Structures are given as C-alpha cells and as structure tokens.
Image 1 (cartoon, rainbow, N blue to C red):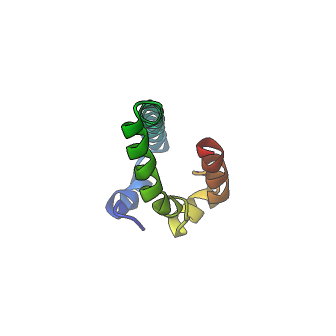
Image 2 (tube, rainbow, N blue to C red; image 1 turned 90 degrees about the vertical axis):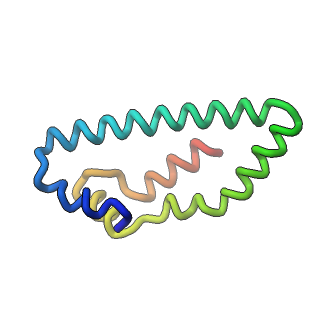
Length: 100
C-alpha cells in the first residue's frame, strides 16, 4: 500500500455518500491538473526552439517513470474487484490513448 495507508484504513468507517463526494472532488482536481499541465506542455513545445528542446528533454527524462504509475498493486486489484475503481488494464489503455 502507498503512503495513504492510514487514510485508507479509515475509509470503511466513512459513509458511502461522503466517500462519493471525496471521489468526485478528487476526479475534478485530476481533470483540472491534466488540462493545466497539458496546456503548458503544448505551449512550451510550440514555443521557442529552446522551450521545445527543454520540454522534450524533460519528457524523455521522466518517461521511464510512467510505467510505475500504471503498475497495479494489491489495493488497485481489490478496488477493481469491489467496483470502486476500473481495472488497471482499462486505466492503462485509456492513458495510452490520451498520451499517444
């Protein structure tokens, strides 16, 4: 389990509606940050030669870590089994479509 283990152990004590609200807010935050970062990536990539070079180097340097984001652990599998989250394979497929 990741660094949120104390928080996730407390989840069963929370009402389902409260968890749904938390999930909605988290999803909204994720969408915001996705759009914000994607916008900057495009602006920098389409900017000057220097900004294009720097953003390209940064993406190449960080790309090796992307697999870690998409490698499921036991918690991911359990959440998918319970219908709380989509299966890891579906998450990976959607991510690959969006970044292609």
